[in-house]
Image (tube, rainbow, N blue to C red; front, side):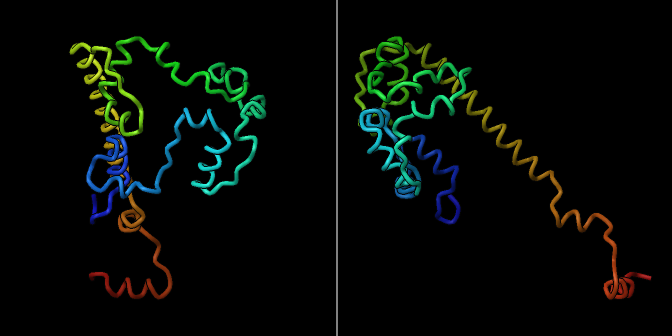
Length: 190
């Protein structure tokens, strides 16, 4: 934090940690809106109206019926969006229980238990996760974090390497005109 105000990076870290860092929940209040998939598909109009109100946009009925605009908005080549062409339905709520393997569910619950519980989701904990599997995940997550940090540092270093307008004005010979020439020549060593 700088001068007592949370910075965007601090807020992002706080959001990832479920707002458990000191002062983050207060700082984040009103800065983001959480959309719950289960509520969205159960009552799309109501949930989208609340979202539109939050971001200051006007609600349109087509928002709750993506199938009306899917033929124009979603190209045919994007087959992973095929459900966009149908009606909004809650049929897929909880489908992760059939689509994920027990070890994958266990790993998700082990890693995200606090965040899930903080948002009202039940963490069953029925699936054991081996130490080897946790280590493999943590090693991959650490590499990913390091890669993102390295990329961020490189961006910052590139910004520092670029000449600023002031540096360019100081180091590049600038033409001197009119009255400035006379004062410049008078100040020049002889």
